[in-house]
Image 1 (cartoon, rainbow, N blue to C red):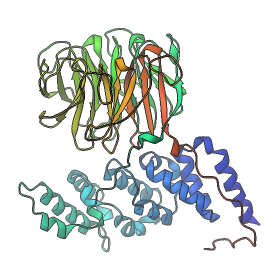
Image 2 (cartoon, helix red, strand yellow; image 1 turned 45 degrees about the horizontal axis):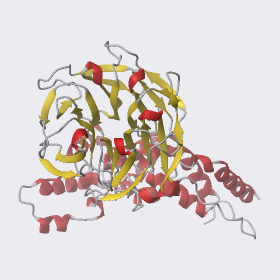
Image 3 (tube, one colour; image 1 turned 60 degrees about the vertical axis):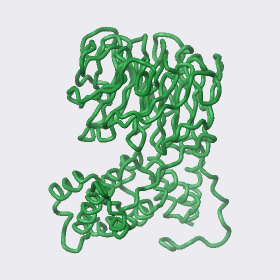
Image 4 (cartoon, helix red, strand yellow; image 1 turned 45 degrees about the vertical axis):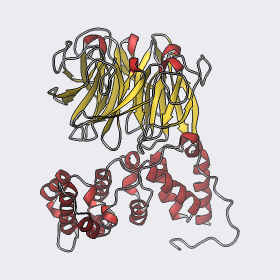
Length: 495
């Protein structure tokens, strides 16, 4: 009777949480509950959601209570999606540290970490800072050595593919990138209206998504950043009109990422003040980068901005200087590329920028009506995407770009009042939006951002004073659990 009641409770929880299917903390809780009462469909659904949202799930306290067999199932899942293998290592360490009696599980969990995909600096940190994990009988020493050898061979000027093949094993495999499903993208809501109040906008431009799903919007002519939760509910705002630290004069672009120590940071391009400003996740001012001007390390109306995956560089579109500049997080100028013009590698006012999973930088070359791709490390020109026009794959003032984890490119086509979706190679896939003020229409779409897992897209609708929220409709509701089977209940702890 106890098991039947628990099963009914579990089914009831699932139905009550249908509208919160993206709440991964709930999925972690439901996973353990469903497993306890042998509700296989719910277990499978929760595992599917957690593997697609692993970074967010592993940061919730509920993840620390996931039983060992279920954690093994999650880590062994071939569809586990992460931006980097460091997320898997961090999750395993947090799970082990939560209860000291879990240490004997380390050898089993270690076999599921793809060690050669971890940065060498991370491996060295683990050996130096966590020596207790390298106890006799654990395979960590062997796995670290395996990773060092594999990485050295991969970086060799003349790569020995035969030798690399001999070292290949499941741990050397890069986890699959989730495919961005353009056909499943569905409009959810438009948030905001014209005005100066809370959740109101005056020419919103840049937009960004945090790893926790928070939405940051550069409310340009209200001279502030507004922050919303994943469902579009207002959380807070920071900034005011001015030139002091923390003030803005038309904030244009916004990026959210982590620094080298894993602390979440927000970088804002302060267009009218010719600078970048760094804040923590709560909007507290940290520092200024650059000043107004045209010398190396100076900016004139900076627009798009992106933080490198390692958190060690900030890359910015220097709009009026017709170039891209790169700084470290202390503000030190590192390099630049681009010049005024219409040729390859030249710009007529670069606007939005985004980094691909392969380390390529895509730049919206606003007045040249095209996108350009570069090697971000060297600034070497790679290719051009698009041309002027209003047909598929053509642009009239591309404003911003975002790149999904599998390389698909989303570009706001400002004067064509649409968002275009392109393949990783730059081929047209589809588009959405038409000109107007209806719920799914745009009046000059500006910034665009896509979540790490590809399930969420947000777009600022500049002329209508709002932003649009889209979701992958296949992820919006979990499957309905089947009716309870007739017959005697299972005994507690039964298979």
